[in-house]
Length: 493
Ligand code: SF4
Image (cartoon, rainbow, N blue to C red):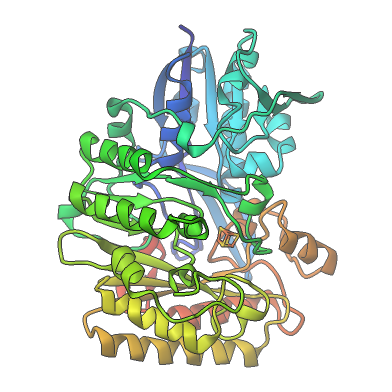
């Protein structure tokens, strides 16, 4: 069997002259997408994980000017220049974040310089394959379902492909059949492989030692919504979900590998509510998490409006569905939901622009019900720096967050409450990015800035990006104090 090195990239950080990091430091988290890739390849190749996030090296990648400062771009982990490119017959590199692009390209250059085949995939390579091909990648995978993984490696290695594929080389697009794999069809990786992917950090905050190490499971993919800032709709997968039995097999595998909690990575876990029997499936799956004794961390968030009596449908009943809320966010100190990210986006008036959002009063009632269910720690995500943002709109957003925090603390005074006011990020391929580019509001081209949640990169019609960044910090400061959360300075101080 040919051998494949599945490479996890070092972690990017952005250091200002005072040594403060301006991006989320994510070095020791569980590796979910690697599990799916390894599962798809394991019957055809010898697979090894090469995790360059592990390690103590700091590799300088140049500087970028931002807010009048020179930010040093640094990759943290293991220096790829110590890798022997010929260690495997081919390499697979996944880049899911724009911010990692330059690091991925440097590594591809290093590996390809020895003539070794490199297959690139992941959300960023899918959105813009050319930078990866220019760096020396043999192929880029243009199919986010996982259905082209085997054929991509076979073609890169000069073997006749045994299945369908949708790929890009420097010369042309290669397509055969319909490489659309449903999550139900994803093969499970080996327990030994999963063990290597477990993490000791969680991007939404600290969790207790009893919940370490952390696993990760993706139980569906795609989405029924079309939010203009999100890349998921560009995958053109619709929404596809696993059966409860299969979903629980993936979660049980995390436990077998040693996980004592897990992050559910689904794009849209509650999408299944739209089908008859969907609510029963959700209850069966969340009961299954409890039966396994594994706390769930909703680190990518859930579309909370789907946990209402109207299931998020247009003009549906916006009151909380208590049974669903308890199943999803209930916590008894041992099992249930230990932490959740709430993608509130623009909770005050966003329901006009985003079908997934509720009107403010209904939103408040639902988030109060979520806290009432017991979840002890919430991250409340809002977006700042939309093209129409002004001092007035962001001031009202700040007031609303403060008001909400007060109400939630009255439901549970011990609730840990953090606000994540993410700046608009122009993810390649999204509707919002096309609009930002056309409007001339974008101020940067460096992927390290464009891809950062904490480095505002676009003016609005009414303020410059520096003011957007100031508003980010003001809203961030409403969070409970937690030192070095996400490795990003000291928030709330
Ligand atoms: S609901 Fe979530 S996953 Fe779906 S399009 Fe909107 S942001 Fe993306």
